[in-house]
Image: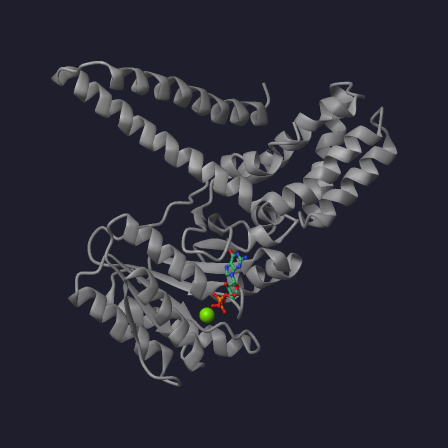
Length: 363
Ligand SMILES: Nc1nc2c(ncn2[C@@H]2O[C@H](COP(=O)(O)OP(=O)(O)O)[C@@H](O)[C@H]2O)c(=O)[nH]1
Ligand SMILES: [Mg+2]
């Protein structure tokens, strides 16, 4: 059985289990209960709660990936309907669809070679049978035998410091707000540090997020040295026993040398207060910018040590293939994805839910 079928079964099974669970909880509610039954019931309720959460998450992926599904995935579906047999034209059209979906030319070329090989070896000529193969091969690009670390590297003690970098407008400040909300929900004490001091508006925007979700905020006035804000912010977090410090930075990439120096300085300041320096440096990329986003990742990778990617605005693009291009061309794990502007719209990146959300109508 192919990978996609497995994923599909997994999410389907969860739905079925849940229906059974709902029925049995309903039934029990009608009965009289002794204490043992009450325990069992509360266990079942807990399982149900957990399942509800998974289901909710899958729904958010599905909704956030609607545009991509209606864009490139529906084109793939049309392709299958258009050709009765797999032939050279079919392959050429497939190649074009994948390139248009921002998967990246090199990745697509390799993918096409592998697909052609498999088609030849397995003697497939029905496009319908090729669907599952396509999804599986796309999935393989991402997984590629590696263990992908999408977990945040939390400090064993003291505050965990997470630095956000990326060019203007990609969604750094918004991502910090959303992540702070997630972490607060998990019971963590979070401090937002506004080190994008070039515009008063940028400081204020982060401040507003803090007020909206009820977490603390620290910054200085416009024009202050970003590193001094970082120093004081991290110190405040240590003194105040914060669990996490989320640092917003300016994203001016006009001058690579300056940006590199500034990031170096910030890292040095953090290292002076925290053993080993920042726990994570997350590069934020706007999915709607396609190959441009990939070039940004390559540039930033040259000047600083990045531990992961946040891919924003996936809800706003019909080209969800950029996730695969990042893997292939930049080889950094996508740790979070932004699927909207609201505080709930940031999700830990999960390749299985992503593939399911993208291809669920395709097969
Ligand atoms: N649709 C959508 N919009 C987003 C997402 N993340 C950020 N934005 C919007 O992108 C714009 C720029 O975000 P901002 O956080 O200010 O970017 P920054 O300059 O990198 O700090 C804002 O209007 C955000 O609301 C996302 O995941 N989906
Ligand atoms: Mg900002």
